Structure formats: structure tokens, C-alpha cells
Picture 1 (cartoon, rainbow, N blue to C red):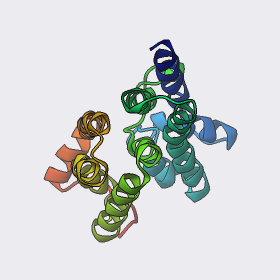
Picture 2: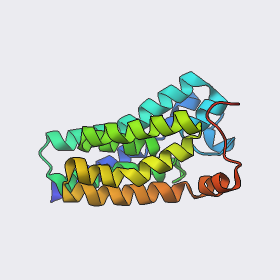
Picture 3: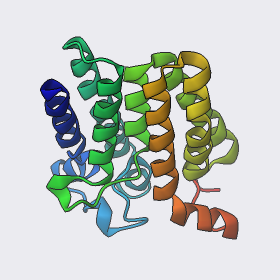
Length: 196
């Protein structure tokens, strides 16, 4: 039980490393929380900081979900503990203690968590995001569709109860973090990934 708590705290702290802010500082770019959507995520960085910064942000945010779960798994944590470690890393991204609790929306970190817990589920979620993004050209729409389908994928492909519950919570939080995007989608004003 103590081991679980240590790994959960470590997962949160690791998730609290805001890749977008760190990458932007290292590359001499403005803080992504100060422009555009003010979201420290890859899409906002892409629009205002360029492809290289966005790619590094995407990679870093994904790794934040992967590493804590894989390490905890290697040290023998059972499924409930692993699910909590993954959720903690995700919460760290949303509410990072090192960056004034002003985090991103969690799409890449959530994908990383799912890949580490059950890679076929993670691949299904990523494939969903890619297809919707290519067709709709809207990152938030792709994220929302992937979030809605993620618990179903986890139930059908993996079925581990703790993972299913964690995925429901993760998806609900992700959708909540996209509430402004949902309003923009309904109003037809949501930004595109690629300019028309």
C-alpha cells in the first residue's frame, strides 16, 4: 500500500512537468499560457511556436503518461495501483504543482497513460484521434471523439475493471477540460489544425 502511494505521488509530480512551458523556455519562445488558447499543449504551441516545438511538446506530454506507469509496472504494482499512477500523472498535467496548477487539457498525456496500461487500447485511441483530425481538421473534436470512445475500447479490448474505471474518469476530466472548445464547436468558431 505504501509503495502504491509513493508511485502515485511520483506519477503526479512527473506529470506536473509542463513540457510546453519547458520547451518554450528552452527555445526562447513565449509562454504558451500567454497566447492563443492559453493552453500549454502541443496544438497551441504548433500554431504559435512552430512544428519543432510542437513535436517536442507532444512527445514530452506523451512520455509523462508512459514512464510513471511503466516504472510502477516494472516494480510490480497491481492493476488498481497502476490505474491510480496513470490517473495521477494525468492530473499532474492538468494541475501541475510546479506551474501554478495551470496545466493543459491532457490529450497526449492520456494517450501515454493508455499506451502504458494497455497498448492496444492506446493505439485504438490514437488511431481515432488521427482519423478524426485528418477528416475534420480540428484537434479538439478529435480529442473529444477519442475521449468518448476510450472507455469502450478499454472495456472491449482489455476489460480490467480498474483500468476501465480509470479510463472513464480520465475521459470525463478530458471532456470537462475541453468545455470551452465544445462551446466553440457548437458556435462554429473552433480553430483548425491547418489553416484553410
